[in-house]
Length: 605
Image (cartoon, rainbow, N blue to C red; front, side, top):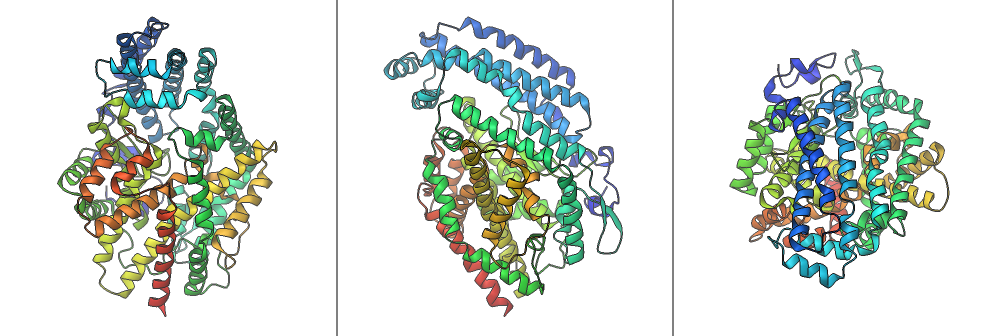
C-alpha cells in the first residue's frame, strides 16, 4: 500500500487494503465492543444515582459529590458516543455502529434529564449562598468558573420540569443533522466524469475537491455540474432538513428566553452580539481585495467568464503538486518547529501512535475533523488524497488535536473543554506556520507566486467564505424569526446574491452556484461558522507575533492552549495580546489579504 493509492485507484479502496499504521487504533478507547457495553451499564447505574442528590444540594459536600458524579457520567457518555461514532464514520453502512451511536445519544439525553434538576435547584439560592457553598468544596478550583457562569446565566435556566423536558428533547433535536449526514455520506451517489486524460472516474467528495483544482476548465466544469446535479435532485429534502434545523434553534432560544437564536448561540461563551455584527460589517466594507482577486484570476486564467468553480484551481502550480501523506507529515513537523520542544514531541507521538485515520475507504464519512478525548487522546479523521490542500488540512486538524491534548492534560475535566470561539486558532495558526515555512523555502518567483496563491486561497476559504456563510446563517434565522418560511427558492436566491456580493461583478454565476448551501454540514452546528473567521483573524495576529520573535509569545501561546475553558474565550485570547472585542484583528486580516493580492499582481506584470 502506497500513500498515493487514493489518486491512482479507479475505485475506492476497502478498509482491509489500508496498512494499519494509517488507521485509528480505537482500542485506545475500548478494547472491544464488550468493554463498551460494560461502560454503558456503568453509565446507566450512575444515572440512577442522580435521584439520591435531589433536594439535598444545600450541603456543600453533597453538591460537590453531585457535580463530580455528573462529570464522571459525562466523561463516560463521551467515550461511549465517540467510540460508536468513530466506528460508524469508518463505514456508515454498518448498522451495528449506527445503533450503538443512537444508544449512546439516547443515554446522553437520559443523563442530561436525570441531572436536569441541578441548575434549577441551585438557582433557588441567592448568588451569595451559591458562592458560600462553593468556598466550602473539597476542591475549590474545580467548579469556581461553573458557579460564576451559573450566576450569569440565571435568567435562562428554567424550572426543573422544563429543564427535564429540554434535556429529553435533545435526541429528537439531533434529527436534522443525522438525516443530512446519512443522506450526504451514505445515500448520495455521484456520477462519473472524464479526467484530464479522458479516463472515466467515479466522483467522491474528495475527488471532487481535487477536480476543482484541475488546470483544465472542462474538468472543473464537468465535476461541478455532475457533483451539484446530485444535490439538485434532493433539493426539496435538503431544504426541508435545513428549515427544520433553523426551527429547532428558534425553539431552544425561545424556550430559554432569549431574544434571538444569535443571542442564544453567543451567550454560552459570553460573546457580545457586536462581535458577530462587527465581523460581517467590517468584512463587507473591505471586499475590494476579494473583488480584485476575482478579476486577477480571470485575467491570469485567460477566461471569458470566471465562475465559482474557477476560483479554487492553483494559478501557479508547482512541479511536485502531489504530496504523498508521509511527505506531508514531514513538512508539517518541520513547519511547527518554532512552537518548541514540548509541542513538537507531542505532535510526533500523535503521528507515531495512530491518532490519525488517513485515507478514504468505502463507506467512510467524508471530510476531515479532530475529536478530543479526555480519557485518552484526540482522534483525527482524514480522507487524504495527495493534494497540497490536504497537507494544509492535516496541519489544520493536528492543530485542533494539540489544542485538545494540551487542554485535557493541563485542566481538570470540568474546565478542560475549550470554547469553539477559540477552537480554530490553533488549527489556522498551524496552517500559517506551514505557509511561512514553505515561503522561506521558495527558490524563485514562480514558487513564491504559488505560495502567495495558496495563502490567498486559505484566507478566502477560512475567512471570507466563513463570513459569507455567517451572513447566510444569520439571515435565514432572522427570516424565520419574522414569521416567514424557508424554501429552496429563497435559499438559492440568497446564496446567489451573497456569492455575487462577495466575489464581485467580475464573477459569473453558473446554474449550480446557488445550490452550494445544500451540502454544507456546518449549518447544522448552530452559528459555528463565524468562529472560523474570528479565530483566523486571531491566529494571524498571534502568528505575526511569533514570526517577529516577540518576547514570551511561545510561552503565552502554549498557555492559551492549556487554558481549556477556565475563562471566557475573549479573555483567554488576551493572554496573547489579541482583543476580539475590537475590529482591529479583522481589519488587519482584510488589509493583509489585499496586500497579498497586490503582490501577485505586481509579480505577474
